[in-house]
Structures are given as C-alpha cells and as structure tokens.
Amino acid sequence: MRAIVFDFFGTLTDPAAEAGRRESFTATAAALAIPADRFWQAMGASFPDRITGRYGDTRATLRRIATECGADPDEADLDAAVSAQLAGGVRVRPPRAGVLDLLDRLRADGYRLGLISDCSSELCESWPETPYAPRIDAPVFSWQEGCRKPDQRLYAAVSARLGVSAAECWYVGDGGSREHDGARRAGMRPVLVTNTAYPDAAARRSDPDPYTPELTIADLDALAPLIRT
Image 1 (cartoon, one colour):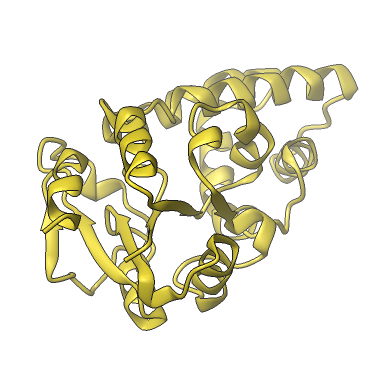
Image 2 (spheres, one colour; image 1 turned 135 degrees about the horizontal axis):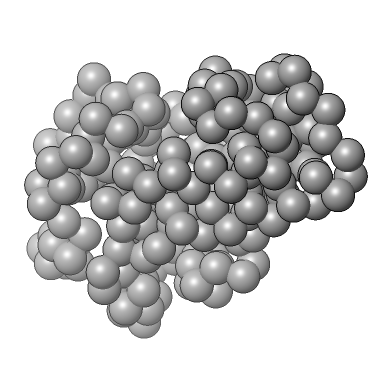
C-alpha cells in the first residue's frame, strides 16, 4: 500500500465542529437580510447541487440562494455575505486533535496522501490557506469535479493524481456519502473511523453508507498502528 486517501469533514476535521454549522450561517443570512431559518433550509435543500458546482462559486451561490429566498442583495451586501460565509467555513473545519502531526508522520513514512471531499465552493476557494493543503498531495473536491461520492470518477481521479493504482490505496473516512462502498468498488481498502468519542457525529453524516468495512477504528490516532500491521 503506497497511498492513503482521506475523507475531509468529520475525518480530518474535528467531528464536534459540525455542530456549529447552522450557527456559522447566521452572519451570512443577516448580511443577505434573510431570516436565519429560511437561509438554513435553502442551503440544505440546495446541498446536492451546490457540492457538484451547479450553483457556481460562493458569490454566485449566495446570490442565487438570496433570490430563492425572495431577497435582492446589492454588491456590498454580497461582499459581506461572502466574507461571512468563508469565515463560517473556517469555524467548521478545525483539525482533529493530532491530525496534522499524523499527516506529517505518514508522509515521512513514505505514503502519498490524497483527499476526496463532498464539499461546496467555500472549501475549494479557501483550500490553499488551510493547514491541510501543504500536507495533502492530491485533493479531489466534488465541487470541482462535478460529481459526488460514491461516484467512481472521484476515486479514479485521486489515485491517478497520486500516481498509484487504486489497489495501492487505503481509504479512510467516517462513513458518510456511501464513501466506503465507493472505495471498495474502486479497489481501495476502506477503513471506517467510527468517532466513538463523538456520539452525535453519525447523525450528521449525509447519505450514510450501508456498507461497513471490515477494518474500523474509533479515532484517527489508531490509523498508523493499523496500516503498519
């Protein structure tokens, strides 16, 4: 095995941070003069299209969401809303405890590191400034690729960009978006991170995976011993 492909939210990020996503949208809704509950509902309903790029970048997305909610923001309002939305994105993606050191150790051990994330425009636009960017050799984002997990094109893209075959990749994730079934079908070896210490995390997974991998770990700190066996 020459490479490790990670999920992002709830795997590399702190699983507890996802609980703050709704609150993080409040400032965006205020900038657009949309009631917070209405904005939250519209963002949730548009999620499948937003994460595959159909709403465009963050500015275009917020303009369209505002229109759908009956608002008509001017350019200054949109400037404020984009800033608020990107700031909210920062709040929901803090690194899981110890994960940056783990990524550094895995790279030092010679592993190529990849990422597949079902994400909207905010993560893609901010990626170069995140602490993850210099540690991930091949990030693959649904928003850029125009498809979401478990679409096989994502797994093929990450293995190709890593310069390895799918059979040489571990796939590590918390089990949303049917990601492990996709990894298995792609020929990767899946590992489920159960996030046992975060009992509410599983309820926030989008499109939970009906397939449970043979290999499971309670937290990401158990990954290195597992893959070295």
